Length: 155
Image 1 (cartoon, rainbow, N blue to C red):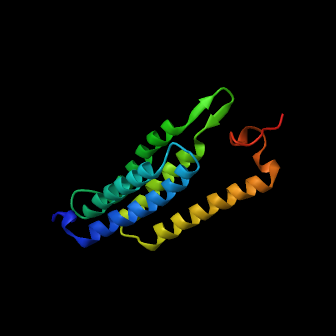
Image 2 (cartoon, rainbow, N blue to C red):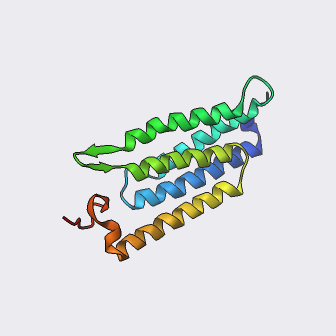
Image 3 (tube, helix red, strand yellow):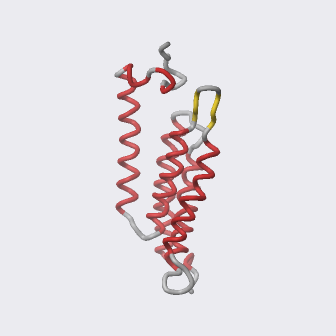
């Protein structure tokens, strides 16, 4: 097997994964969340590399679907660490879900997809921003335990 780091395709995948991960991480960082640009970039690039390795062993000694399965399970531990339970309030669920999504995006990149990860990244960013704006304009969407710390809670 040739060294993949010597190919333009490998570096294109690394660059695409870095852009997608950094864009999502930047959105989180601008909102003051612990998961920021570096974390997003690293998760996306690392999962891209694992998926790429899984795809490289097709027909030899491995199965790329097992690699993807292990990525999905393993990233759950990282996401679980982002969730904090304080009394009756739970924090970090969105960050945990985004960590899981970053792994999926990175996996798509590692399997050689280009447009799907870019479209998913763009759609995710648009949805998160739109939902935030919607919550700011429609008060009942941010009531109770779902209200962010910077917004008043009812009750």
